[in-house]
Every structure is written in C-alpha cells, then in structure tokens.
Length: 145
Image (tube, rainbow, N blue to C red; front, side, top):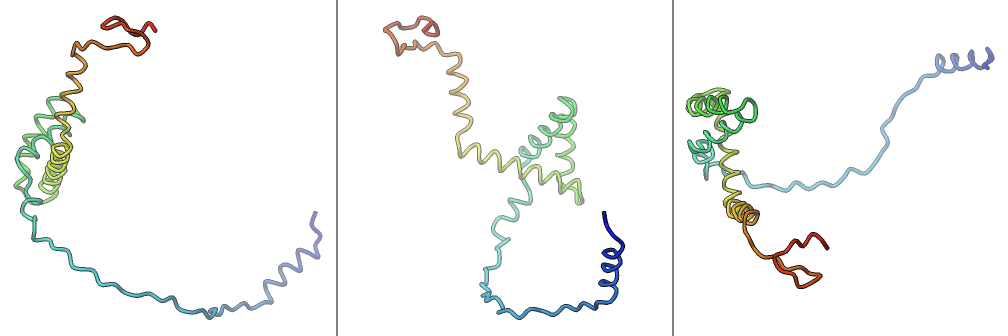
C-alpha cells in the first residue's frame, strides 16, 4: 500500500531538482602507438586472384552436389568454369570458392590425408590375424572374451 504523501513527495522531488553532470578528473591513460609494417599484397596476388580450373570445378561441383545432387553438381561446376572470367559478384564468388578449394587441397596434401584415408580403408578389408591379449588364440573370434 502506498499513501498519497509518498507519491506526492516523489513527484515534487523530480520536478524541483536541477541535475547537472560534471566530468570526473582522472589521469589520462598512457597509450603508445606502435607502427606496423604495411602488408605486401604483391607477393601472390596473381596466384590468389586466379585459382586453377580444377579448384573451381571441384569447389563449385561440390557445392552443387550438396545443394541439389549430381545434376546440379555438373551444372554448377560448368557454370563456375564459365563465370571465373567474369567481373562482378558471380565471378568474385566463383574465384572465392576456387581459392577455398585450393587451400583445402593444399592442406590435405600437407597432412597426407589421401594416404591416411587409403590405409584406413585398406585396414577395414585387410585379413590380418589379430592376437588376443587375454589368451593365446590367434585369428579366432576375440570378441567372446
């Protein structure tokens, strides 16, 4: 419950008071500017600007496959190959997809992912005799232990 005196005093206080703001004195922070060297854009501008045809075809084809299957993959791969020479948003996006695909291929080559995948698949189909840790059985079903 609220009485009328409290309500009236609250409205009178805000109407009669004049509030002003003054800045609080403080020490300015000490900041030292460190010059950074200008980036060198001339080193690999042509290589980055024009990715290979294979990178564009694979990148655009993969994007089309994810969105619409094999027909759209073929259509986007060929469309990307056509659009790579054009100026404007289609050409820029196609070259960007090609640069991303080329970077992913280089990373996979550096990490030897193809070799690792090939040996993983080969280990699935390989007929190596496994030795059981718990007994001396070789080549038998070791999941029974």
